[in-house]
Amino acid sequence: MAWTPEGRRLSEEHRLAQQDVRDAFLAEFIALWVLLDPDRLDETGPGWVRAVMNLIRWYRQQSAQAAADYYWRFREAELPAIGVDPTTPPTAPRRPRQRVGGETGQRERPSPRPRTRRESSLVIPEPRNSRVRFDFDRRALERAEDRDRRRGRVTFEVPEIDWRREDRAAQISLNVAGPLGQKYKRSRGQRREQAQRNSFVESSGAASRHVLTGGRKSLLTLLEQDRQIVGWVRVTDGDPCAFCAMLASRGIVRYKSEAAAKFQAHDHCACTAEPVYDESAPWPGRAREFRGL
Image 1 (cartoon, rainbow, N blue to C red):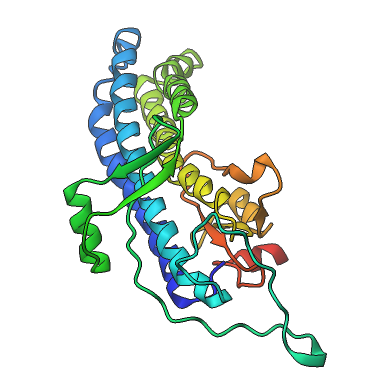
Image 2 (image 1 turned 90 degrees about the vertical axis):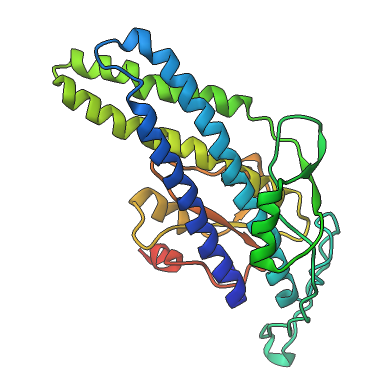
């Protein structure tokens, strides 16, 4: 939920950036599909799963990188709009907000503070030390400089994210939707080509979901550690499925339980999360419309 036009623009750019990551992944996924021979599923299945897992890990990292970059930019754009210095560290306690408006009690939006220049960039969580100083590569630095006109070497401390559980889940998804799925479909009477086609749709959707887990989990991890945050809201495209529209209609997910750090996503889902620093800010997209429905 963004107060500023800049925040709304960043949220939309982030949604599109995650779609770009997914599209780039699928382009390479298609090239690997030929490794899974429908006539030799037992022999070619394990190699295909290993190849796709390597691809998932690489693009999951790109998704995490895009999400972390979005978080720092969004934070810088939105905090001044609620009267907080954007240089305030995420670990600083949130100060109580004062209501203004005289006898009416109507809350007035505070005047934004001037934006200050901030050195920030991309964060890619890795399952290593509990606290990591991560230096991004030169090409990523050049891209960040082109976009933000920032200069110099930038590093950030990022929390540990252990991806082993997600790796196991992705391997199971690929096996079930890929070689095992094709064998099951053919045992139920589907022709070879039909079973292969349906398996491709299912496995590509499952794999892309695991890729975008990188951005979703990384963003929610950063938000959970930000003491200025209220929670987060779901951002959908213009025509989401009923499941995603229902979740978006619920509004703010507050950090009061472990469930707040989880993002529900189905195969082929392209939804993202937006930070909430002020619960009175407008809901993104068509969420209010979905709430009414």
